[in-house]
Length: 257
Image (cartoon, rainbow, N blue to C red; front, side, top):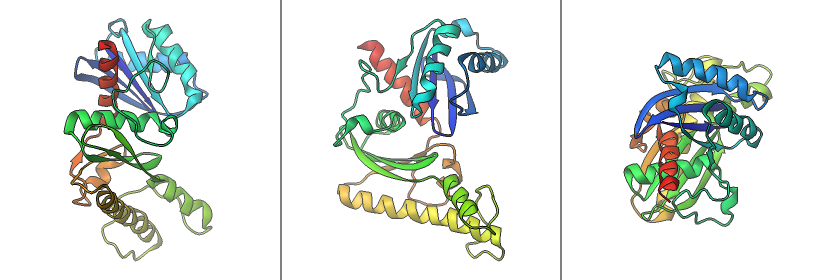
């Protein structure tokens, strides 16, 4: 079995694959101070609840945009699963696609992993929208090459900014408001962020397609993607497992190589 770890700015996701089958998936808030033993005890208990034996995990792959977590995650793999993990972005790990940007080393590991999975599952050209700490729009051409994209502030980050910058605006969790016109402060805030993001999605996808000059599929992923997928016809496919599937695909590619 394969342990796939996606370490983002806000959350960290662990998943176990048996071949192409996702056997279990667990999410935790990301804290760079957390030790390998803390991860190991927590993960071992959750795997046991899913009837997954730790000794059955023989391989691992990690993608992280938080370098401070890498030591603990590597130690977790070595100490609890007796394997040396592949790390996306490290020397010798081939993602299997071209990265056609000015500074390939600056591209986040999660964005490349999404591109790999989207190309493999749906074929290019396409746009991958990832609703995470940042909302990213990534472009993949017909040959499967990563061609760049757009980075916008994330939905929750925007809600937090409203609360922090305006003394009378409360902290609220994002949800789809019933109406566009808010009759009270909280519904008005929700409408501004939610429908504002729908407008951002539609506007950016339209501009990306016009600049790219060809029809493109639009895939949505990330923790908040289900909240927006039904709000606009621009999003054609919702795939919340995209990043994990990409990690499994990159591991298979490197194993064959």
